[in-house]
Amino acid sequence: MYRSHVLICGGTGCTSSGSERIIEAMEKELAANGLENEVKVVKTGCFGFCTLGPIMVVYPEGAFYSMVKVEDVPEIVSEHLLKGRIVTRLLYKETVDEEGKITSLDETDFYKKQKRVALRNCGVINPEDIKEYIAYDGYQALGKVLTEMTPEDVIQTIKDSGLRGRGGGGFPTGMKWQFAAAQPKGQKYVCCNADEGDPGAFMDRSVLEGDPHAVLEAMAIAGYAIGADRGYIYIRAEYPIAVKRLQVAIDQAKEYGLLGDDILGTGFNFSIELRLGAGAFVCGEETALMTSIEGHRGEPRPRPPFPAVKGLFGKPTILNNVETYANIPQIINKGADWFRSFGTEKSKGTKVFALGGKIHNTGLVEVPMGTTLREIIEEIGGGIPGGKKFKAAQTGGPSGGCIPAEHLDIPIDYDNLTAIGSMMGSGGMIVMDEDTCMVDIAKFFLEFTVDESCGKCTPCRVGTKRMYEMLEKITEGQATMEDLDKLEHLCHYIKENSLCGLGQTAPNPVLSTLHFFRGEYEAHIRDKRCPAGVCKNLLTYVIDQKKCKGCTLCARACPVNAITGKVKEPHSIDPAKCLKCGACIEKCRFGAIEKR
Image (cartoon, rainbow, N blue to C red; front, side):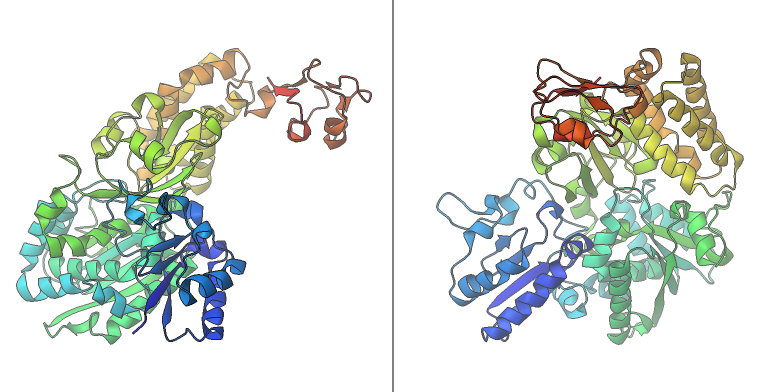
């Protein structure tokens, strides 16, 4: 029996900033102080507050140590774990009150408006120990459905809950399961989409790293509901920690009789295999994903027939993403009414977002559907750094759109986002400030889409390339207003004629920025000016003669000798030579250099 537990984040984010070394140092220091049998070190999944990593939480006190360094470990052990004196200077400031007492993490701005359902065990348990998952009601839902519910009961519960697919489409999960269950008996499959290709998205990865058994349990429940005995998890090979923990979880579940033959003595058989993806964005589309699992090049297939009728290996198949599955066990345990008790009328439950970009608190947040964009950005996210103004938030990745400041108070759910030209997507949310060029952002996402198009259909293969070229002309100051009209026309053509969701949604970033920020496009074309000062071809670097002190730092930093001037006299920049690299601005101490 341990008197203290030290939870250290072992997710990808904290691992990349050195948490493995902190775990090693902690175990070594505990042994040196004779505490190895009194204090247990637990490597958990992601806590969500990625800005503060590496993170360490010590229980029973709940002391939340942030940005921990290896050199901090001896002090934490000697002072806190040996002498019982919490090292307050290393704690996250919001968890210490004016009297120096520890306050709950749930009371901090980052966590108090969150409701963790899909992320409930992340940062709480050791994801590589099935006993810890079971201690938190793990596999209780599977036991319940196998012993107390019929497959029809399970599907009805999921339908009644209002759960919709968290992978982007938002299709009702229970209805999808019902379609597959209605197919004639025979071989059927349950698939999990863990491909997660959106730039800036890491929700599914974090669930798999922090709570892999929740997904395995949910897939087994789905298998029972539709009459399938086999499942596949399609996960990108770039997620080595998630892959490892999933395999460990599968092996442990088999050992405990929770996967395999005759589960819990009920006669139900269900096995799960991993399939590694090579990073193709198009394989996030359901038919392309299944084609890849079959061993073929990942390309989409025409629909209908839909996968519930003819999917993997030509058999009835359901496909849900990681976050969708992570909700299932709790819906079974707590009931459909519990899940329906939060969210909006048509979007029930919670949604996990990967909050990134120009925001103080980057990380994972899980909020009830209907939470406003303002609450996420200003309260949970802590606002925009450097006193800058919020300009837009990109949701849905390359398939989504940009939400401007005028819609900051919109309640976030599937229908509201679609109504303003964006989409929920898998949950990436990239925040942009006033220094962001919206034309450049649209070009960034188009470049990604062009790169990731499988090339099967002409509208996507050729159309996205032409769109990108038009955007490039605009950012280089070579476009005309006629080009802008052609761009918009092409967007609608590609949406209507592409084979799969990748091409059908590829124009969304362009269309949403054209709708809300058309003035920026026109400034690039008519005025040959980038209002945000981002597009290099439209910039001119100028030295303010009144502010320049002639210190020569800018001239020495310039790689092409474009800056001239004598010591203690105002300098000037030759625009013909200037590379617009910005090295001079970084060196100037007097704010004398401007981008125009």
